[in-house]
Image (cartoon, rainbow, N blue to C red):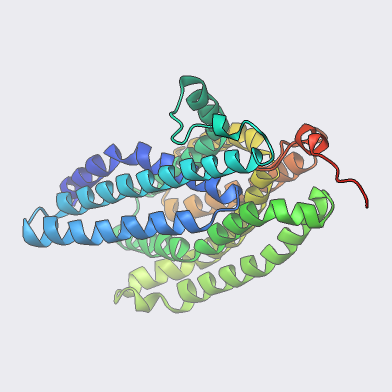
Length: 345
């Protein structure tokens, strides 16, 4: 098992920077109100993945290496499609800002990236990149923490992780919707971020409770759907409270985080996430967890504690007195004040 897994991870690792770039560009597009281009990019990547999988695995017999190569290629295609859509969106916004300006022809039809522009893009995307990277690190360390568990516990961990990933789109969808709709909600709420944030969190609590209840029910009473081993089913049932709690808090945190991103608080979130990942890594890889005969249960409860620990952090960020940066694509105060005021008839 170790040799094929190593092969898969090495090939997939080549495309990891592209995966992170894709997720960052996706977040930037959604924050600007564009939810269609991320869907198209995912569709392109899925089609490429299926086609190349058939060619490399079934046709050429590459096995695990072929599956990894197909996924890596699909990641590259999805990243390229998302970056191209983001460039088009940037062009559209520049033209929209130039409406009414006499020198609109000064905007090039096919603007080329510059070193300064790429540098500004890197600075703006860095908090999102750090957030995504830190979450990836937490997931990897969670896997490493249970490496000493028995085969039945490892199988239960795999089922629990699958359930978490199956229902985590609750959180991803809410976060994406928050980033996309928050600018318009701010205008309706007369620029009162607290009102928008409160509405999002109230609606999120329902999704959190529903996701947690579904996870607990399947892990506690439906583990036999995934395994015929009584030992694995019993280990999975013992994880039900921790997995359900982690998903419920994760949904709330992710929607909270997405709204704060849309309100311009990306920088403090990005700066705190590596610190959180470091604390989780130290806790999971310590003797009290990794070297314990209860490594599986303790690892998941540490994961729950990590999610809960983020709640006061996000609340503190939301209550900061500094004026948040305007959402991407929104005009600043000087631009609004410079707009011509039509004369009354």
